[in-house]
Length: 489
Image (cartoon, helix red, strand yellow):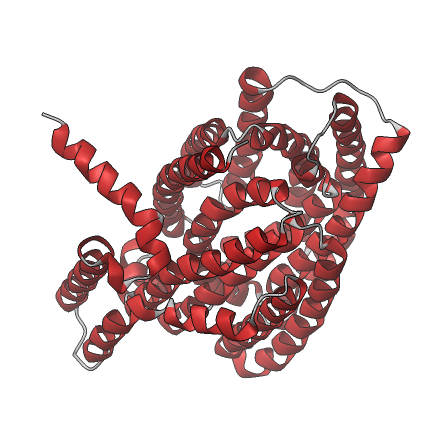
């Protein structure tokens, strides 16, 4: 594929992913706001614990098989069949295993309330394994539009059903059923309309390559999920289910938004980087450029959450959640570092540094556990600060290691990182003034309007204030979109 064609494909993929991200973001925030008013902190606490278990279980069942299909430059039919067959076997095994271990797991992380929900949710592990390989086939074709459409349709249908169930008093089970239905709808759309089921078969040579790549990747992903889910797994016992629910709501809200931005670049970058993994100079260039571009957005997003926490909670949570404002403000600061962590992980996977990535994630588990253990002694605020410190420390270590592996300049990377935060300077000064004023709903709305106007002016009117990378890549797409709007009658 020619360089020009690759670039066009990348930008087209980014445009589609951006549109899908906006649509999914609107749906998820709407669902989030409605459910926050229908369910209790305990319901959300229990579901947070369940989601932690499911994230780890699914990463083990996936075994890096989907990523192995994407990463393989010339994946044959035998390669795909082997990955699919292994995925089915792993999915069945871990679904049954979780079903049988549910009573034991439930009592370790919380109480017997989780037994039935965990047993019901175990069925989604097999579906996730199948979806992972199916989506990988679409990623190889760079068919981002179809993947996004499947996600939006599935989420809309399952969320509507979840809201109806919550309104009728199903409590925790309304979220459980909504999550199961999302997997069911995605599976139907994927294999019913997008791709064919691969043939069944496990071939020796293909299995070796897949296990070699997928094995280390799986260990790394499992460790990464353990690191990110540790709060959900231990806070119910160390503090209480209600405290877990109170912490996870703002953390989940911020994570929902930031993960969507991650997804725009991650789903597009991974297959593209896998294709250029042998060209070290290109990889270094893309790494520095991606750091510059992503941090321009993430810094502004973090500041937006930080200074608008009170308004966000009033709108999307309800006034009964106002006591968690400090938690959201602390969590907001992690956005910049979470996005950089996801970026580095994408490079490790794409460039086949899975063993190294696994070692770093192993370090991350111990770092997070230690910070959490210290943090719980200071209550929920201590937990928030503990997780923030562990996130910042780990992403700095990852950045340094990736620079060394790609022979990139550490100084250049950190310089690029800091310069990329320029767009957040004026909004931060404005926010500091706002914090000195008496707060009310009216003042909050006025500040949000001023904040939004400043960001709009920076990114649309004065793009050179953002970064050179932004001017070269994203801004041309914005101007092209505006010109199309002007041409419409």
